[in-house]
Image 1: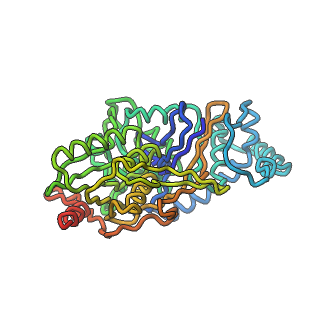
Image 2 (image 1 turned 180 degrees about the vertical axis):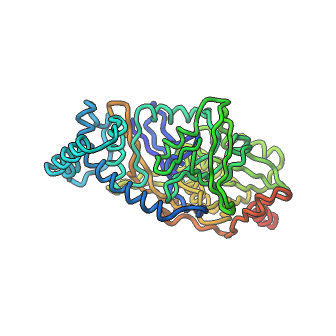
Image 3 (image 1 turned 120 degrees about the vertical axis):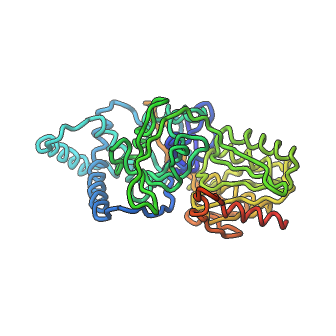
Length: 455
């Protein structure tokens, strides 16, 4: 299995959908959203002890260096050939990284460190956790912030998530710069929404256990559980003096990723939450219904949509764009792959795309393609800026890893990685107005409606 994704975070990432993974039967490329761990600019949380975090980070970094050194021991002990099943596409630098890293000195140092642990540590070490930490450390040592290793159980779980049904609270998460999970989006009619979880909340504890230093997978695992059971999520929220303990009842989450309605003046509104396999069909149904109601203008809301499958965003673009390029990618050897549209379903009405700092990955592909082809303008704030592709490769023992293998470009050849896409009309989000219990106002959406009224 050799499959690609773009993300994240990236949008791997989510409390109910921690990664986006290609189906095993297909070898086509996809963009994930990263989203599994998508590093998105975060708001500061109050009541944060900076000295404590600095100490923890220094300790973690020192431990990581040690863990990376011991990986050869974990490989020998596992008895598994950690070699990709399929060929790894792309060129090579000519260096044998494994021999360079695992030289005689490093192996001797590994043995010395393990001897110290055996003789001096007062802890009873969990061998399996130790091995996993070593592997994760090697991947982290690559410097690729989107690189990730998955064991067989995690891969199975991720692929199951793509079936569209899972048990959890219904919120997408990513790790912020402080090492805590931050809520990127809350699913409609989910336990998270009814329980008071908000976008931007920082999760500090799950059932009273501090989640600092945990991986996103570990945090997700603690939040998930059997249907009907409860989980207490402690969050730090900007504007609140104290932490909030939110008791949520886990439920079966049916993933509805496209929501729509007709606004005033025959302005259709479509909100795409994620780019899943179900997104193109749901989008087509929304467009058909809105057109039957007399839609004359369209707003596509991609705020906090951190990414998803490439085939999903390409399919939706094919429903809107004229003939031409949707997106193209380039690997380390300069080899390009282009995704195109035949133009048979080109949209002929004004379109506004809503964006924010969490609009990332595949959502930026959609935004860039629509803007470059002159089929839409964007309104809101600058997008995240994730313009790279991650490839997933699985090993003979059923595990897998992802790493960054390509960069992508909009139809006009623009590279947006680390830059994002600036809005044509900049409108900052007014959170006070949006969360006003008596008169809730989405000022960015209102600005888009006002713009289209004059078109």
